[in-house]
Each structure stands twice: as C-alpha cells, then as structure tokens.
Image (cartoon, rainbow, N blue to C red; front, side):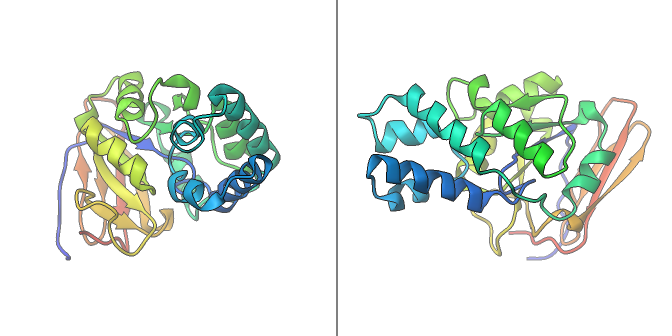
Length: 239
C-alpha cells in the first residue's frame, strides 16, 4: 500500500544485528558451533535465536545446561567470529545523528556489541542496552523500555528500527513505533514501514524539530530539543 503515515517521535532506538550490521551469518555460525559442541540439532536453535538473547534460547531449548556458563561460552564464540560489514548507509546516517537522539538496543552482550560495531566501522552510541543490562530480553518489552528511559524519552515517542520478529514484538509491546529493516513484507502488521537498507533514508538536521519520513510513507516527529532530525526514505514499503 502506498501513501503517507505520520507519527510523533523524539528519539531513535536501533537494533544492531541485521539492522546496522550484516551479522546474520556470524550469528548462525556461532550457534552451529555451540550446537555441535553439545551434540544438539541446530535447526530448532536457528529458528529461535535471531533477535533474542542467548539466555532465553538456552533456557527454552537446552534447560539442562548451565545458562550463565553457556551464555559466556557463546559470548567468546561471538568475539572470535565477528566480521560483518555495516548495512549499506548505516554509518553515514549514524554519524549525522545527535548522540542524545539515539541508542542501540541489542540482544548481544555489551562487549560483543562494541566489538561488532567497531569491526563494522560504525560509531558507538552514548546509550547501549545490551544482554547484561536487562533481566528479560526480547521479545519482552524491557530492553526498549530501558532504552527509552536512558534517553529520557517516553517509549511512545520513540521510533525503533528492527529486523527480527522478537525485536519487533519487544518494541511494539514497549509502546514504540517500529520500522522494519529488510524483507519484502512486514513481519508484523503493526510495523509502519519496511526499508531495504539505510540508503533509503537521509538525515536533515536543523533546530527545534525532529522529522523522520519514508518515501511510500512519512514518519515525522517533533522534539523539544535543540536539534532537528529528519529522515527521508526513498524506496520504503508500507504495510
């Protein structure tokens, strides 16, 4: 469906894996190695792991194992097998965002997230909500609620960019507006737009206003800060 949609937002909350960094292959490799170590079938794990903390996956599919010990094992594997490039256009966009206007909310640990962002040549955020920061990971709303709180913005005034069903659900349950990154169709009917990559958005900075828009739709936001932030997409799709 084409047309225009408008929402009010004050900040961006960004997932990392599959949203800012092309790390899906790395994530799946790590989980395959972990499954091989424990002689577990990888298919159920790979079907569940995207967008979720390792702790939730282990509790659900291998409850006989020590969750914290295995989360640490997976963390080490992720440090060893991280080499993904930035999603096209991500670096250019992030470097134009005022630091107080955005945060990363990821299911990766803090050190893995920083390692992955550095490896992809992306700037580090002032606010990073990682796996250890929360007691419940995605799809629970806690990660995005915390990200919004640390920016000092109400969740309903935040625009989230996500690529995985668990992350989209987490953001929606937190009360955020969600744009999906990647895919040809919305993974959830509540997402307001789908973009292929960050080349579909541009940033305009000014004073007093924040505006976020997509091409087949428009997402605008106002904020009572000194920065004006506008994001305009070129080939996005609306559900």
